[in-house]
Length: 250
Image (cartoon, rainbow, N blue to C red; front, side, top):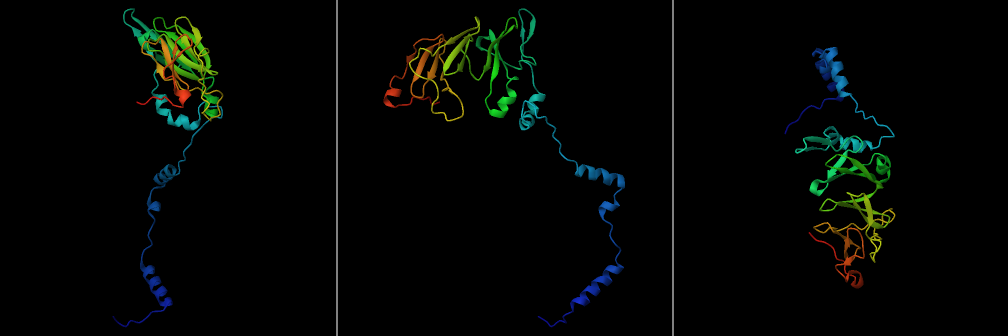
């Protein structure tokens, strides 16, 4: 504790001015840098990010950025037949995605180029489906503008798809289509789906082990439907009658 003389504000300003008079003026670090280095540094700091896109790009720009690494490392599926000493390229720029079916007699190819833009804008994705002979590499168009594809059978002879309220199988050896649900006394349209979709399917439960039939679901019961169609067998019987939903849990 003590008594000190209180200085006026004017006196403080004068003292500060005297101290600064004798002190050399500091040069900012930026001014000390050579002009060339300073210009380079400024250019790096002010460098803008630039993304160039076109309004007719089939993929949205955000999707292109996310999939950039995948695009750079993309591979075309090929096969080498050891016995025949034959190399076959299965995928190309037209049909980039190809998957071998079980038993390796056939492969299934997908081409969405025609529908990619509208699919990204509306969310309704379609594709053309091809069947490829793994012995010869011959490719045949199986389906145009298919929206609901559900994979090949366990024996690799058919694949399953859905169209306009019915399920179909496609036999790859004969290029024949079968409407397998037209005679089944129930509906496989998902009326509980409130999306803006016409006749959406209830997803199938899968194939039986040997591929001779498909397990379908009507939101109540599970049906065993032959691969080439027929009446089908209601495996759970009482689902719709008693208000019981038979689902799968695994």
